[in-house]
Length: 207
Image (cartoon, rainbow, N blue to C red):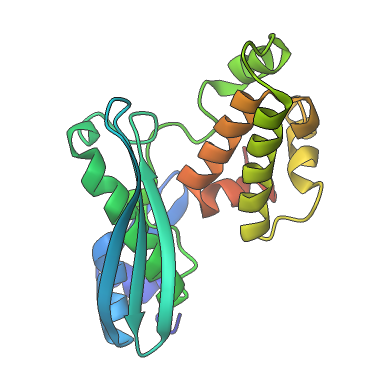
């Protein structure tokens, strides 16, 4: 990313939230334009209209190559004003993530923020859920959920055992003691918060 944060801040492409800088969607678009961005394709890959949850895949192309990003939105990770526009927010987040890859922008997009900054339900509920009987869950459900979580961690290059180490430091059940629902909630948190969540796990942000 050739342009500095201060230069982007002067162009009003930066928002400062919770002591950290985030790039706006407009900023990503302008930055990509300067780097030869030529097109975007989006695909709806998951839709649960009853739960009001959507996930998109975005592909951006240009002089820098072709890059992909995924974005999801549901009532747990957006503000109340965005709930009627869930479909568009999911698509916007997907495009933002693809544009961040394309521009090699290390800042998280402001549009990726929303809801709580930790797994849905908070620490106390997470611990209780892990200890509670998992009615209707089979070993395959748990294995599938753990595999999905591990895939996300691998995508973000989180070292093996680092996530469990972080869970232990927060007095939370490790992944081998989680129910399938608990594993899915953690995967959802990582997917929703992206680099912000990874920074927390890796100790780059206080939590």
